[in-house]
Length: 181
Image (cartoon, rainbow, N blue to C red; front, side, top):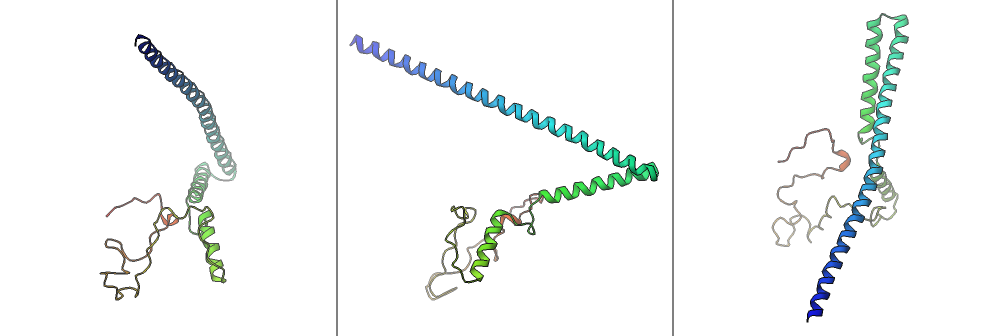
């Protein structure tokens, strides 16, 4: 019996040592990954700062070039208007738009064109995962909307849902406040 107790003590020591080695290995790996990510973040930050100064120097050059033929205040005003218009265009380019189709929207438009030309509708999207944002709609009960199935409200939308299609992710403007009813 004494020998079994000694082996149990050795098992606990072995488990503790293995846990310690695993902790140290994970800690070292995380430290290395953090060091790499920190370096990358510092380089991105430095790049942004240099780009800011380059933009300021370019704006100064435009202002000085305009100041050759115009009063100083007019050159500064025109430079500010140019920078404001550029900022507006860049902000608009960053937002998704219905006129600029995304990859998902392009696939949807291609499927609609195929169906219009008589091709069979695809079973699922190219990714194969389906539209996980919205569950599939149940089929309409036999007899159509309000048919003779005896089920109250068969084919009608569930209570609490307004009539009309659900908004697509492309239609949602991230800048607008979100209100919940």
